[in-house]
Image 1 (cartoon, rainbow over the protein chains, first blue to last red):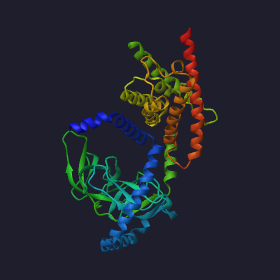
Image 2 (spheres, rainbow over the protein chains, first blue to last red):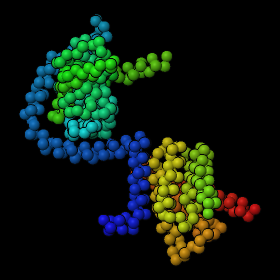
Image 3 (cartoon, chains in turn red, green):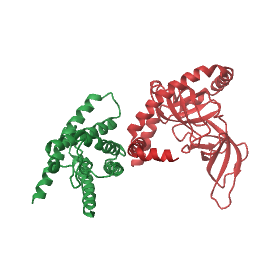
Length: 271
Length: 171
């Protein structure tokens, strides 16, 4: 201990210098968008290629499971394919799809932190941009936060800032789905008006109001309804339909009309 | 003694204000942006404790940063410059022990000494600052060009200030 103190005293000048520089760099990276994105992109590039190699090596072990999953997914898509067409009225059907699905592989994922991120093997080269939704065959997964050339990082639903606009399937009531760090299997729906009754097993789906996720993507089912006396809004717990601990292939959703929708919204705000 | 503290506090505030209100609005041909505020680090007395040097440099840079919305960049460059200052002084006059009362300025140590001393430190500061700002090496030479030009301008301003102070003292 005394040696340590002597060492610190002897070299305090250079140690203080390093401390202040590290602090300054932390400030730079946290407060300046440009520097932050450069760091994020270059580290994305490096960690992405390492994790990608690791993943290719271990991919074979889960092939059987993945095959099953893909077959199920195919079946589901066959039965639902009409859903991705935009109907503006009953006689007119938009010729192209409104949402483009880009398949991607999860190469890094976490579920045990307060704020979880995952990395996918698709990037700007494949048309990925920030704020695209990510789903898997069972339900929603998260939102793309940044993309480098070959990879992108995704803010998982298991994140402090994640707030998904959702609705109760049976009566179309709008609610918000958040994650309160209980368990990676369990989410919370907030802001349920007290006059609405929710029962065990009710299905929660995306509302399609956010321009990120299409309408009707499964989020989960109600597990437990919490009523608090005197509160005007109630909360409920849901079981996520997505198994966040077992994600292999996901789909990134590109909303082709997003710019148009956002522009229109801006126009409304100005008026 | 308190007179010195007051003087340097005033200099600290004045230099930051002059930097953010006047100099940052002057940009000749988009390349040149003199950073006169580091004059404060140049002028600190020789007997300033080293830790105080670093801390003061940090807050000086940070003060400029909060005005220009480049949080941390000027702070990092100033701290680096303050870190180099003792070595540069040793380099320029290795065997000389400065008598108390002698300060790093043209009046006490002559034009050549002060010119070399300021040139090295300003160049170091500008190198760090501009490369942090650009944050990549692919534009190495255009950044170096900016560093050179801005260093020249800052140096001219620093020496001009010296002569201004001279005259005031003689009166």
